[in-house]
Image 1 (cartoon, rainbow, N blue to C red):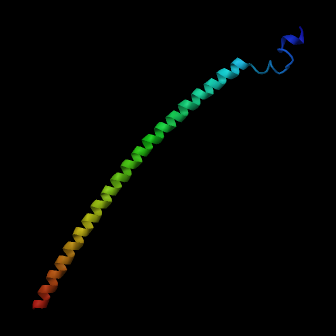
Image 2 (image 1 turned 90 degrees about the horizontal axis):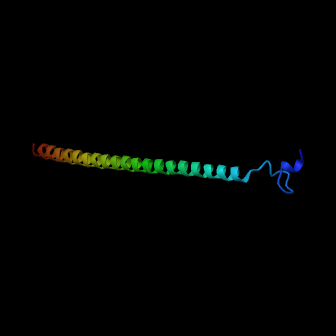
Image 3 (image 1 turned 180 degrees about the vertical axis):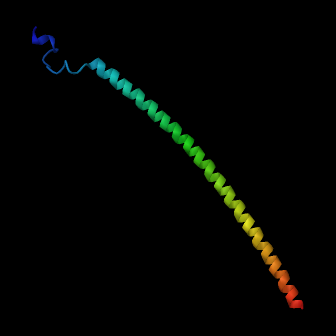
Length: 90
């Protein structure tokens, strides 16, 4: 067997590097990256939407709690005012 059968032209390493196989591998890697990036983008969007809902719910609860505290404080003040007026009369 001649050595020239194992490589093309003057490059002895061409037998180690198959350009078609390299292109197929690069295409497969690109497809894998696109799929993984696409799924992570979708997960990120879903996660972001969930976080926005959670923040919105927490803010609504916080506003309701603040409103309730304000109402309790106003009732307490009104009660204390009435008690003070009654105590002053006697």
